[in-house]
Length: 300
Image 1 (spheres, rainbow, N blue to C red):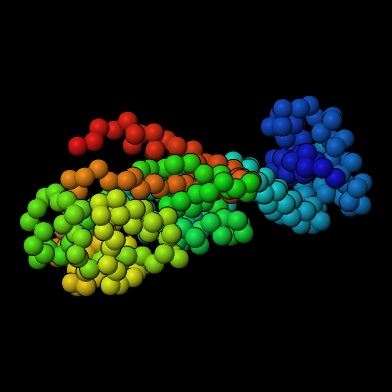
Image 2 (image 1 turned 30 degrees about the vertical axis):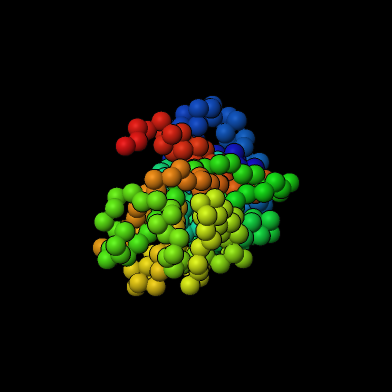
C-alpha cells in the first residue's frame, strides 16, 4: 500500500462522490475507481457502499478514514521534521565560552542566531580554554570561544577578535584618576591573576607584557573567572590586567584604564569540531556575517 492510495481514499471518503473526488485529485474517474478497488482488495474489506445514487462509507471504511488521516498527518509531519533537520533549522547546538567572551560581538551572534533559528536547542556552558579544547576533542561541545587554538585534525579554528589590554583598579586607587597609565606604574602593585593551569596563554601574555617593561607581577590572589577578578579588585584585594571585553562587567567601584604603551593583542578564537553538521554550519555562517560587519563598522 502506498501513500497515493491513502490520498485517493480520503478524497473519495470526504466527497462521497467519485467524480468530484477525481476532479479534486486532477484525474479522471475510472483510474480513481480502479485504485479504490485495488485498495479494498489489499485490505480484504469493503470501504464504500456504492449505488447509482450515492456513495457511503462502510463501518470499516469509517475506521480506515480516521486511521488514514492520522497516518498521512504523521507522515507529513515526519517529512517536515526531517527536512528542517536537514536544513539545520532544528536540532541541538552546544556552545562553550570563556567568561570574557560574553560581551560585544558574541552577544550579537547569539541574538541573530536565535532570531533566525528559534527551534534549535542551544546549550551554553562557561569553560576555560583548556576545558574547551578537551571538550571539542571529545565531541562534548560543538563550538567554543576561547583564548588559544592549536592545530588539530579534529578541530577547526579562526581568529574571531583581537583585544587590547586594560588595567582594572578600585575606584579609590590613586591611579584611577588617570585616564591612561603606564605599565611601569603597576610594578609594585598586588596582582589578581588567573592561575597558569587554567589559562596558560593569557597568563604568559601578561607576564610577557610586564617582563618587557622590567618587572614580574606580584600575585596575591588567583581567580579563574574574569568576573570574579573584577569583584576581587572592587574588594580591594589587588589590581589586575584584563582583556578589553571585560570592561563590559561594569561596577561603580572599579575603573578600567588603557595603557600609554602598546599592549600585546589578546586573541579570541572560535573553534569547532571538524565534522560539522547543518546546525553548526548555520551558526558559523552567522558568526562570519557578524564578524565581517564588526570589522567594517566605524570605531571610536
